[in-house]
Structure formats: structure tokens, C-alpha cells
Length: 196
Image (cartoon, rainbow, N blue to C red; front, side, top):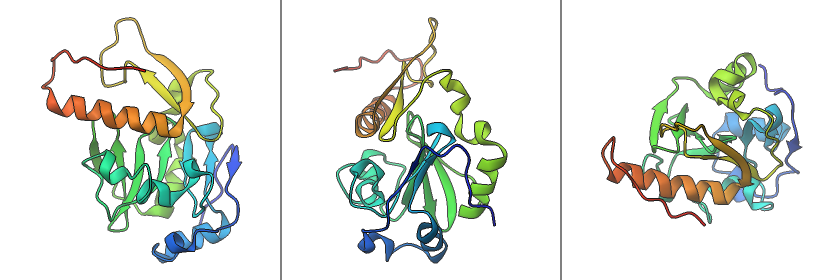
């Protein structure tokens, strides 16, 4: 069973959040006992860990804490395990032992029809297809950062897109805000965005 991912730039410390670890399915526990989360593909994939700090790497923080993805995005349910994300902030969750992918800009979720280890194998074989990080160009991100795209990819951009690294939580909050705006407005509608 392949679990070694490519181009790792961050490895989580030893497990110290056993409250979260104890409620995980056995196959995920087995993975975390070998590797307590990581960032692979030079930032293209982040698998969160059972750790209290740093918060950006904490599975508990994304599941129940200050980010709480089930409150940030309507498509994510409280029982979904938000184990990972790509470099843009699209989320990977486990629901009924299948991997689902949330397109965070539009708050739409899709069942990939594979389990966790099939997901790992598929990413090793076709990372660009699954993660979409070929769009990064020369952007380098550090652990704790995601790539902000403006305007978001789901919007037609006649002058192209601006990509810049920003803090993980800031990007998640932006995507939550943006997806809520998108859901309230039909296709083709102009929307105003408040940017800080």
C-alpha cells in the first residue's frame, strides 16, 4: 500500500491530540501513526494532523475549532472528516469512508468514489489532475499558507488571475465569504466583494 508522497516540505510532529485521533476510522489512525499529517507536492497537498499546534495543521481546528469547515461551507457536514486540502483551499473530506472534494469557491462537493488509500495512490500517479497545482507557476508557499487567486478561478478573468500566498485561515475565510456571495447570485450577476 503506497503512502509515501512526493516533494514533502512539512511533516507534522508526534500526535498530541488524542481526543481527535480516538474518533478517527482505523485506516486513518494507521496512517497517522506512521505520519501525523504533512504537506506534499511542494505545497500542493496538505494532510492535517492530530496535533494541537500549529493551528493551521490541526485536524481538530478544521473539524471542530476556529475554522470549523462545516460552518464555513454548507456542503460540508459535521461528521465529514476534513483531513486535507489543496494549495488553493479546496477541501478533501471523508464521508462514509469515501473521499469527497469540496470546490471551495462555489461550495460544491463531489464524491470521488475512492477510499483514503486509493486517494493517496491516485495523487501519486496524477497529482496535477487531482490537485490542480500546475496553475501555480513560480509561486512558492510556506507551511501554513495557501494560494489566494483573484479573481477566483470560477470567475472569467479577461486580464488573467493574480496568485499570491496568504495565511491558511485568511484564505479559508475568503473562500467561505466568496462562496456565500456566489450562492446568493445567479450566473452572470455582478457581485461586490469587500477586500481588506
